[in-house]
Image 1 (cartoon, rainbow, N blue to C red):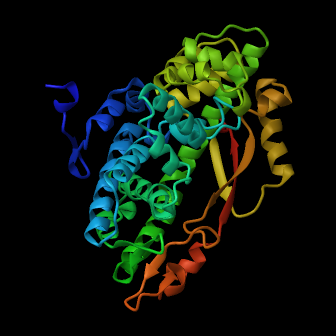
Image 2: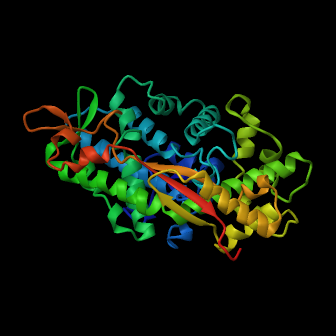
Length: 409
């Protein structure tokens, strides 16, 4: 018996049994690059708010692949011709779509490698795996890059109603215990169709689409952009920034070999080599947590205290509002902290800082979610909906935040 025949199904808490469709998918799942996703948290620092949110990118990738299989089955039943090669390409592309995430997912994006998104790193991983698997991923890469002629295939992977979002909203809702995000992914997939090479949803699913958009908005404000998660992620970014700053001054910090490499070497999209990709593949959440434990005892005040704040969940205070904070307020908080601890303005800026977050549940300027009416007409869901709030949800909402230490710190 071949090794890949030993494992046909995976038991998932959301969908039950997930079938692994073929040997290529199994071999990709078994590869160390993909197994690393078991050690990359799906929701960054959200577990500091929602204790159950310890699920990983590994869970999500398998779930999204499962939904992709269901979507292909539905479309075939409706007369949409999808070849076996196209189905395999879709499953491979969605399985690997998040393989480029670094430690703590979005929390540290652009912190390890400057200005290089996880999507770009995912593509680099796919291309490397393609060479290791004798070019068997070429088709999947074409679809992933939206270079394949049948555009609806890419829409299944990346659009405003794709299987990626259908899985992570439902999965994150389950693990956080926030019911507002529990979208009806099964009904939405059952209502999919294709018209003129574009993915559409049958009109009778309009209320499910409305709920999906509202759920996305609520999950962003209530979970993904929760102020405690936000301040924890900002501290994580700053502790890595401080570690790089100290390393550049010649100070040796304890860390794993992979993390030390990225602390010592500024890496950008233009200088990201295959060797660096291999080193990146050795990085996960555990490198960061282990480093934080060591750095919490470091003699540098900033590094030590930022690390302690994250480890002990003794975080900065954070205020959010609809307009920018005055420079007077920022200076007041910073000067008070400087006075208490005799720090430089530069060092204090690690503890007192501002920023913005935004939420746009539906973007009418992008490729829209289109409904197929009973008369065969294709229209934007925001225009078809009798809920006026869908157009309102297409407007970007921006909030400003100010982080600063507690008065007793």
